[in-house]
Image 1 (cartoon, rainbow, N blue to C red):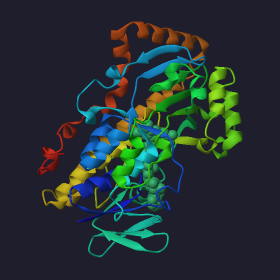
Image 2 (image 1 turned 45 degrees about the horizontal axis):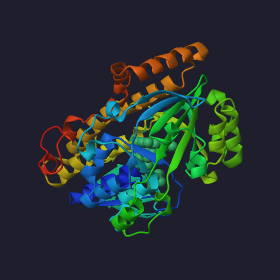
Image 3 (image 1 turned 90 degrees about the vertical axis):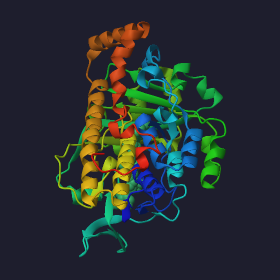
Image 4 (image 1 turned 180 degrees about the vertical axis):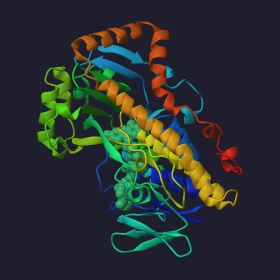
Length: 449
Ligand SMILES: Cc1cc2nc3c(=O)[nH]c(=O)nc-3n(C[C@H](O)[C@H](O)[C@H](O)COP(=O)(O)OP(=O)(O)OC[C@H]3O[C@@H](n4cnc5c(N)ncnc54)[C@H](O)[C@@H]3O)c2cc1C
């Protein structure tokens, strides 16, 4: 069996790693002209669902390299626009302490993660391959057609080509992705001694939300590479030691309702975008404004968030989709990449079972799609609900009430646990994820998943 994967992002590469590990032939076709042809420098939060999937899909040396290059996930704090602490939700509430690293949560550097996911796949990933459409061959296989007119034929085609997926448009024309009613404006700030002196310790730890009485909020998260991270990455893929893995940085993303933003904000970059952000946070802590003024200019960008509408069950075939291609969601809550990784693991398992003759191919894909629709659309709903909560027009009185509640939660542990525990439930293991690699992962899959 040969599997064609369109898109070498987080989900597509994890699938390729999983399939290769299981001995299934795979090729990834990526539109980018090369590994570092596009800037993508922010931190990404990997929750236990993502970590579990990485451990299952990656060979042991790359899984160890992942652990060696990640920073701590950290606690989750809520602060005022004056950067006064309201409540800090400890890691133990979000992700109960476990000894298994695959049940942990991590701050990963996105370019590092993609480099690790590409490691060892030099003969599998083809860059500069822009997919345009697919067609079925006379013998029921599937051919991908690329912009340069070339074709690639396989037994299965997987669309892992992100939010604007062409595979999805052809495979599921009924699927719609609509505006989520939020725009994110991201900044990456390298943390020097001078800069760390500007903000309170809380902002230099884990993840935080700056809450305000407006239809916007700021998400911050720090990435602190552990000692030896650059060396571990270089050893894992034989590439250079990246300077970017030797110093910490802060991601600050201002998320706002489109109503409070000027028209065409997503077209802005550099100084023009910085001015929009500075106007929005004019009444916030002057130190925070100074901090944002020091952002890496290359990092400044605004993205309009979209969300997939759930699609009722469709008739399965040998073309399927994973990740943002089928369940795009606003990154509020950090579920999109983790859900793409979950898809990669489940689809690896199903395709491996078909490859080994333990299941028919199309029913195996159908079993993947059934589960994926359930947890994937649940993640979209959860991200939208969180977005509605944090962008709600609470008004001054509502904001006072909320802050008072958060301050009470800060003092009363059981209340804090009760209030925030549910927010992280998405990453709890599903039945098919509880087996450790080496147990059912490598055994015949004959029923269910
Ligand atoms: C600012 C920001 C912060 C985020 N933070 C988090 C986080 O902390 N945690 C989390 O879980 N998620 C996070 N996300 C979401 C996460 O990045 C996505 O959900 C994830 O990247 C989806 O993975 P994917 O493989 O499905 O798609 P992508 O990563 O988008 O990969 C798709 C790939 O397909 C390629 N492609 C597209 N079209 C074609 C074509 N026609 N032919 C060939 N190749 C093509 C693209 O070049 C790309 O490489 C964040 C998103 C943003 C924007």
